[in-house]
Length: 194
Ligand SMILES: O=c1ccn([C@H]2C[C@H](O)[C@@H](COP(=O)(O)O)O2)c(=O)[nH]1
Ligand SMILES: [Zn+2]
Image 1: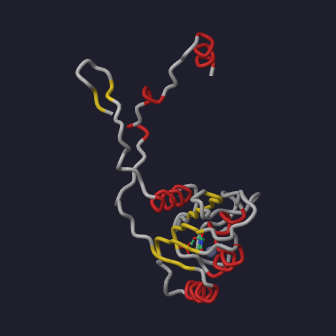
Image 2: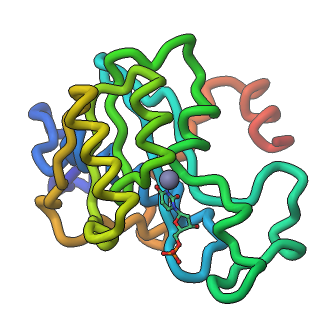
Image 3: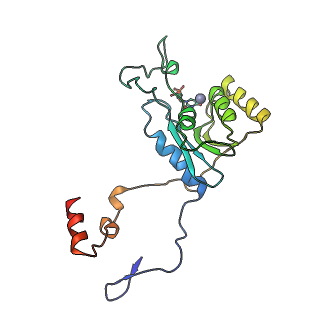
């Protein structure tokens, strides 16, 4: 929005062109979820999307309900490791689903799913997996995942972002332009109270 000479904001009648794509939106949502992870090494987020581009499930890697983040291990060495306890992002996204079926859905995920998650993905009906990192491509679990996806007909492909950076800077938000304009004294009063 620009400004015309008398100080009145100029409203554009054509649509914005710098909006993000569906892929960017859903992958960014997966990465936003990953920011909730307490894992010091690998933070994973997953976002499940219906064939109508509606988000139907989100998850990140974290300890199970009731297993406090501060009472369970986050290390990788020794007998007591995080791997015994952490719920994977994909599994959490699937169990968090807010619809009856995930048939024909796709999953956006920060890391290529392990073999256990691949089983969940296949059984849930998800048909496509879009991932960013394949850092464990050489591990048996990743090789097994790909073998199962190929056999089950689940498509998977690595996402390459169009934009290198996607920033949400709260300090840049123009709060004045987002405030509701009071229309009546009653509404004005309600706004002041809240
Ligand atoms: O399919 C997967 C595989 C792994 N995760 C989680 C589980 C752990 O919290 C980390 C992996 O930790 P490393 O230190 O990199 O071994 O990622 C997942 O959510 N989904
Ligand atoms: Zn997994």
